[in-house]
Length: 292
Image 1 (cartoon, helix red, strand yellow):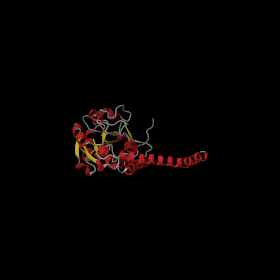
Image 2: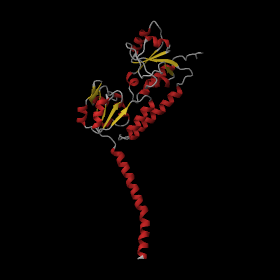
Image 3: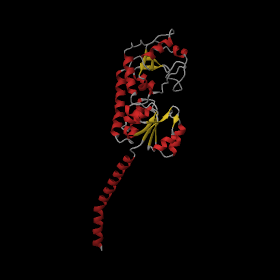
Image 4: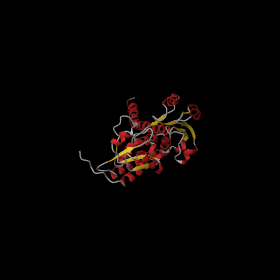
């Protein structure tokens, strides 16, 4: 019996490491399988910006419905609309049986989103206030994408390009910049928005950066007392002419216009707006540092 037990012990000693190896391999395979299961097959986007994020993250082929004004890339125009400024069509979304919803926090009403979540549908929220957070959103979407490398590469490219712009367009004395949205009423941006970050990136200083609310309504007097050296708006050349006329005769400063979709959507193309703004601001003379 002693000899037999010794043989069993020796055999167990030999096979135990092999058993552990098999268990570890099984766990590794299970981990790969579970990460693959997360890849979404039926995706719905509830805003134009999240639609652009989905395509950038390699999820374009999985989109089955989008929001109104989701017009980029071209393929998005062919998809059914299930959301607009009027609200979210919960019944239609449920009928489409999505396994992932992309929503704009603060832009989409919360109540229908809570309804959808109660049915167990995963919802990814996006509401970036800087370009790094757009890159983070792309990294987050990678786990749901059939092409995760595409999502991570898009995120890294954003971060690298932002760093290049910040380095290249830095100014010793920033240009006092007024971000103008509308005229009557007159709105602007605080320092906690994507649009304000772009101004800083290009060597500008948002004159309402210290506002406590993200999108404050301001008066003509509040703008003029801050003496902006440049005004930034979204739109075409005719919009620049309208804005210049709005401020005459009190003061006349350069008006920079930016592509509306690039500038107003919290997606990867915000970088195109940044490049557009940086190039135009670089053509303006640097202000003389003021003495205090």
